[in-house]
Amino acid sequence: MSVLLVLVPVAMGLGFLGLGAFLWSMKSGQYDDMDGAAERILHDDD
Image (cartoon, rainbow, N blue to C red; front, side, top):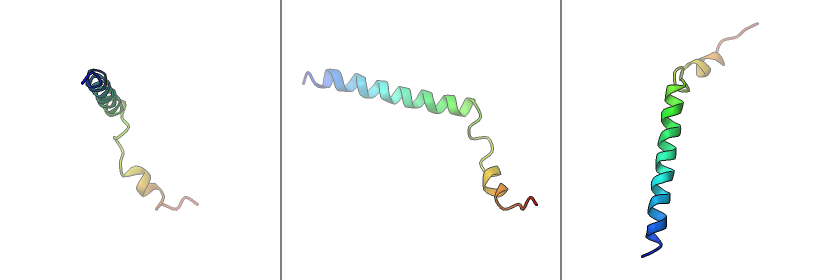
């Protein structure tokens, strides 16, 4: 039972850390141009 007193806050902390990293990546524009790189390879730049 005492193990849960350690594991639950650690799991919550890791969850909030992951959520914070995801929200930071959304705010910084990581997902703005999802099709640009996929279509860029199709264009021939001679």
